[in-house]
Length: 236
Image (cartoon, rainbow, N blue to C red):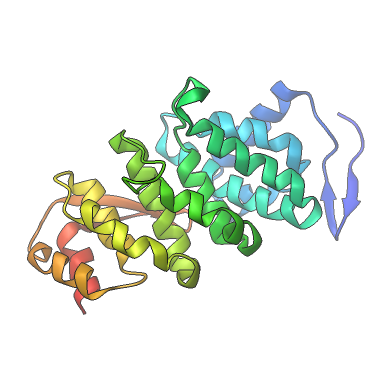
């Protein structure tokens, strides 16, 4: 396995064979102690651990997927402080995954992109406009509802962390607040709560009695809300 390195006060694990690394990363994502798992993942070489984390963004296990999203944001933030261009390469990879020309569907990429920007202001400043364009009909609009949910969650995550950078998204959330899909609708209401506008407050007034439930991933845990509870928060 090789000796370890000691960098910035932490023992960093040297490069591992990819299969072994993927196995170890998965074990970290499944640890009962969420924070301990994140800390262990950050001890692997940051650029090397990105690929395994990308693979877990496609996991059908919700806990593994969402913890991979958290880990990706943490790792890219750390990478940006050491190698900003290396972090930008990962951000461009998210963008490529969401491009029709990629030939695939970028499951998990919008959530990981939003998580990364919530953690790193420099990357947020550089990529927030592109990110918001994914919910704009006149931008790089994503037609798949499941990808829309990922972007809306990412905008909400970023907005609650850095509302001053995401004010441009407020007007574009209205169509999603009016969605017939309660999960998409609830996520949009939650995101709008970071920068309530008169138009969005008015739009959610009729939703306060809605009882449809959704789970929102926050700080390593899933929190269940009704659409009405989220609407009530926005109108207070």
